[in-house]
Image (cartoon, rainbow, N blue to C red; front, side):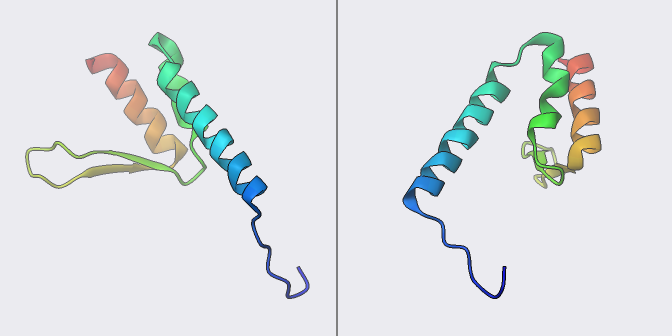
Length: 78
């Protein structure tokens, strides 16, 4: 950008907040088999995890493919 820094305006920040909120609401509203598509709401390198493991160490799932497999496992087991 020709050495210029982009500066977010309050309006930019508000738009991003609304978009993020709508994405989270959509994620939380998904039911049944639709939940198998939730990974598509993440950014490509997004992650999710389980912090209630026996070892106390979190299991972290990164990227769409890993998140998709996690969703399939959760659908089968729960």
